[in-house]
Length: 187
Length: 172
Image 1 (cartoon, rainbow over the protein chains, first blue to last red):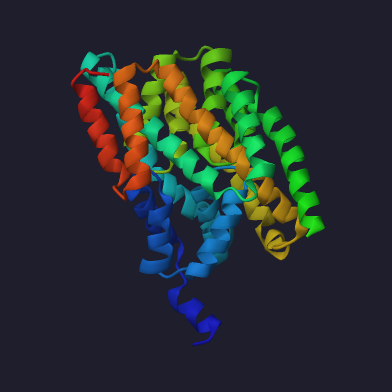
Image 2 (cartoon, each protein chain N blue to C red; image 1 turned 180 degrees about the horizontal axis):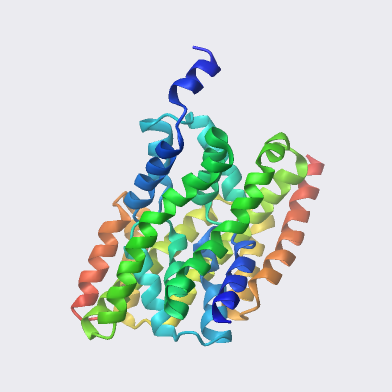
């Protein structure tokens, strides 16, 4: 089958984009990306596995919420500007309403000791999940002797010295990106 | 006006959110708790926990912060501010960007950004622990979560539910 035939066969309209990404947003607990992959690659086949990895790599490289960036790319690809609006709005609308309902509950019952205890328990687990994620990312860093010092510097500047993050990131990116550029040139 | 202020603060943050909204936790805390005093440490921790327990992208923690600061208008302003700037940038740049795939400067940024993002996530975890003023019981849960998350494939939602139940008992 030619690419064109395949594309016309699985080419989603605006409604499909909105609903497809809504299902991703509402089913994604503790990280939406695995659900996005399942929907895009396996269930609806809007992208191949390779395309997904490439696009995700791009989204992870850019700032901002990865999965929303991904929705913009997929939406634009199939339905232009309207698609690039429908897909991320679909992704966010459902969870946005759920979160607002939880916010109303919190406003009403948040002062109860039991609720505060529950939230502290969840925060402790969330904190553990973040440490675990940071650790996995440390293991994935390439060329650790050159780049791990930057991780340490960021932690010192942000967590300890409480410097403003935009400045830290700008400075860090110039230094660490500069070293990466230099190293790439030497190969 | 507080909604405009909220919008501008979060829009600025969205441009440095390498590693997603999670990486922004320390900076959001600095802005909303330390600088503007829009909420205290306990509330910040609670909102983070609610976002953890809710479905959807992690970015929705900003929706909750916006809600707490300025109601529905605040929730919308914070969410749009966090998502819109990069979405527009990506929409405009994606075609050109794909043509640069593999260029040396692009690889350099990818390589260079990774260690910074790790530092941000790590700082986020540290910050939650500080803001929540965890005692030994909470640290036990943190440690157990790290172990389970790294050693097993258990879905995080089970851990979150378990954390909630343990917390409900009032031990933490």
